[in-house]
Image 1 (cartoon, rainbow, N blue to C red):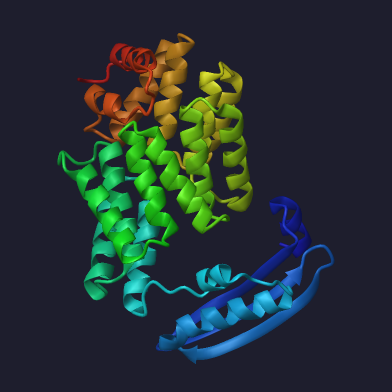
Image 2: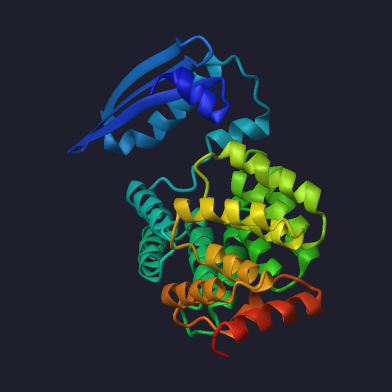
Length: 338
């Protein structure tokens, strides 16, 4: 694609493009920074290095981009850009693989994610980011009913806390703690943790979307929607979870057409994302389309055979028991087991 097309699609001024090629123990990185409004190049470079120098190359490329854009960074911003959570290249690669498996949102992939991230920690026991991502996988298996272990949520909480003890400036760990507090129905603590994640990294799209989600469940719909939409701009290739959040608020506002439209977009992004089918089942139950509601519940059970009314009741963040009971009634009628 031409950089002008990328600029238009993503709403950005600058585009970085390039490639990474690995042969044996050597790596070649080509990169060029373009002004997408004119198509002109601001900076270009090719690096041929030993693979063990990959972190130094990342820092070098980052600094060159900042210099080309004539950006003046604060000390915290500069530290954040050059922060390395591990110097172990093998551990770094395992952590990246673990994250990729996690985003597939299937039981099998989540198990593989846990293996990859555990291996990263085995290789570097001080790898705080790997601990926080491992916490995310245990939270994932609890919300989807993939594990019968009642301690999955506790394990997620302990791992996230450990990551923060190692590095309190880690935005991801605070976001994950926010997730856990949300499912514990502690909206105030969930908001504080996600606000801290955003404060640590204002461009962290998942933290912005998560903060929006908390505000939505707390009844602050307009501000919550605005944050989720901002997160979508920051990360155009975001997780289907973003569409789920908007779908939930549109359902609560009785904007059912908007909800179906946004949730269908979520299915295109990831047809196996559990939350999308959960929201669609709720929506179809509300508008009395029983057959479609049952179909969505069946899809939930196919993705997560261990899912039940008990787990559903635990994971609905609403503090209004009337809302919780009405959702439970919809799923009970649609055939979700106790």
